[in-house]
Length: 278
Image 1 (cartoon, one colour):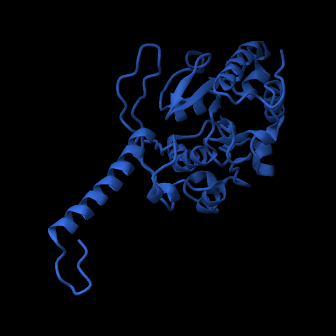
Image 2 (cartoon, one colour; image 1 turned 90 degrees about the vertical axis):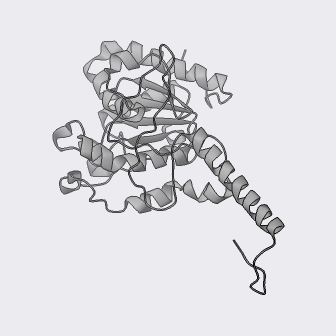
Image 3 (cartoon, helix red, strand yellow; image 1 turned 90 degrees about the horizontal axis):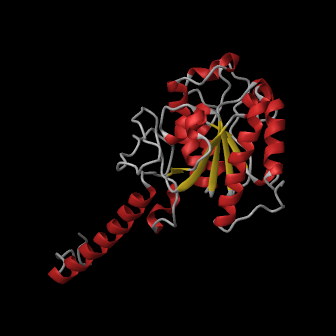
């Protein structure tokens, strides 16, 4: 408690007023964290446990405990004292630095952080960089990236109007699936990117991305085709463009997923800038 200018103890009424002000600030902060579902603090990102959720309603995905982390997504404006916790993409990239947090740094050429505006209505999250991405430093720039661009354009958007990232920032050798320790090292930065971008809808591409972001272990065939919730953000899993190049007969199903995203954005009052493909 503060004292008077003369160093005398404060009056009981002053103590009560100070305590009441502290309680109001604490209540506002706790209320924001409860709505966001996790904690996020200024400075370097660090692992945090996945929040324990109440039992989901029938037909929703059941979260599974994991060593991966989950940072808060801004559902509304935080209290003034916590606004510094929402870092910009530039700050997050600076925090990532030349990253040697996992073994992938030993074989990578370039860190592939992510591209797109801040904020962005729509966010796509893939698995990890491939050879072309590792060489150039941007996500989805190879053949799979060309197909993703076409998918985005068919939805009525352009590549530079959406945000694109991966669950890991460095290429796994031989394009293998990222391993748990590699995902855990990158996860705080992905969570911070989501928080900075503030998308209305997230589209995950492929099983690894869907499982990591949703905190589940399930085949993509059981996840795609319906919306899930990621800390207040609508999330649609679909097939990875690389899989669609190998299995073109699945493109119709993927387009069905994207059509649901188009309809959901319309419902949220943020339609595509251009008419989607019929």
